[in-house]
Image: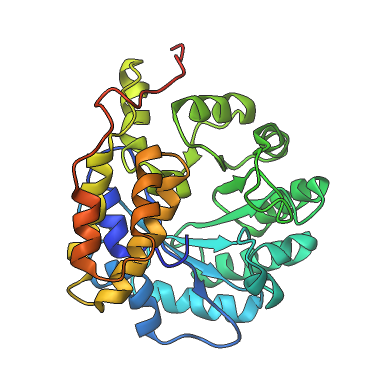
Length: 325
């Protein structure tokens, strides 16, 4: 998700109803208090009186680090800049991040999770909520339960659980049933995350985890209207058709239109490829476009390739599963 979920993306993805709140890319905390410009870069919404997207959806600022004192200092800095919620990332599985003692690396020792959460919660003195995201442990799922309890003990207001260990990365399947074991041990709300790509996945994740709420990551990039379809199903019991290619392409083109104002053309093309690469795993037309455009470096030509007439019929992609209300 790094490099994609910026303020522009948050704006685009919250224009349709469905998302209750969003989270920034992580602010990497090492051993010192970061200057305000770093926080504004990751969360320009801090410059507003309310830390929300243009559509009014709250934005939570995420910190990633392992040093309790440094995390506390940066939590105070974020609070002074107007942050209304702080999230701690104990879920990132990236080797570079883990090698530098960040993200999921802390899941090897639940005491370190508790110390990090307690330091941030103490720094903001309950003036804003502190939340956390973990995985089902680093390698041992049994330790994941202990890490979840540690986050709660440290003062987390809610906990997001990605339904795989760090060592499992993003390989299927997601073990939503293990989130139920964690949920049974906690009193704070638990939110299920991982491999929720469609309405059927949403219902299965909720059923197996027992969680009322889910967090979407790569899935909302793969299908920008998935949150809307979930919300529509919650209200009506109706399964709307899958999102057609033209809608996906329009989102990418609007993204490019915003980004080209501040970024070089080659950078915008690279970002579009990153997003399209996520889409192609779940949409045949996105896969065809990616195969055609993967070596294109000119922005106008890339956008033309996205907007070219589509070979698929309007009825090509529908939700396969029928869900019971």
